[in-house]
Image (cartoon, rainbow, N blue to C red; front, side, top):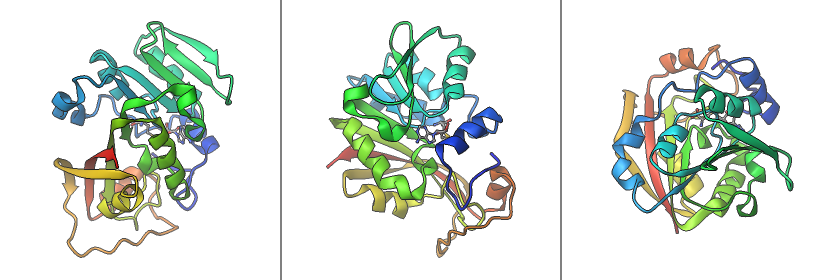
Length: 247
Ligand SMILES: C[S@@+](CC[C@H](N)C(=O)[O-])C[C@H]1O[C@@H](n2cnc3c(N)ncnc32)[C@H](O)[C@@H]1O
């Protein structure tokens, strides 16, 4: 990903622009390996899942193929169109009545992707879910929107639901975000008011070990053009999953 980000923020037009220009290096050509790793606990009675900021992730396909009703929200219509066309899934489209946007649905209604602003999502609009699947979503949100984002997701979760979150931890001096570096303390400080948090260290992907005494020093300027070169320059790089339930 190169970035239009200024000082680590990106607005909705900025994200749409990136899709238009094909600057979507965050998109992976397969589903997250964590899905198979945690398959036993993901399956079972829970059958609805919501993916905030879903892009065209193939995680949607994994859930769909495992019998879930899958919903997601994505601001860039192009991403949602590409999701259906690239996966050869026929879809129908309708306009949303209460908020600006559209709903793309598979013919069997089991995939429902909202082209809308995440912050417009309400239980009245899209329902409540057994599982929230937050992959590259919280880390993409502007820092100033984090509490609003969490409040929105809490409203979309069933009381007994589970929230899975993938985070990334790297030296914030090399890149202003998105994705923002979100070490444990950022996750805990943002989520612990509403959630019980389990850190799933067995699922860690440690690319470069973090020094014990590293200070977190976010910067407004960065010297790397792409996130790949910034990650190479970071002295540490860790991908970690968290599992949360409502308090
Ligand atoms: C880092 S990408 C991750 C996409 C996807 N989760 C994945 O793993 O490939 C973040 C996505 O969020 C979308 N997005 C950003 N802000 C949004 C908002 N306020 N509402 C809905 N989608 C948003 C962007 O267009 C982008 O596709």
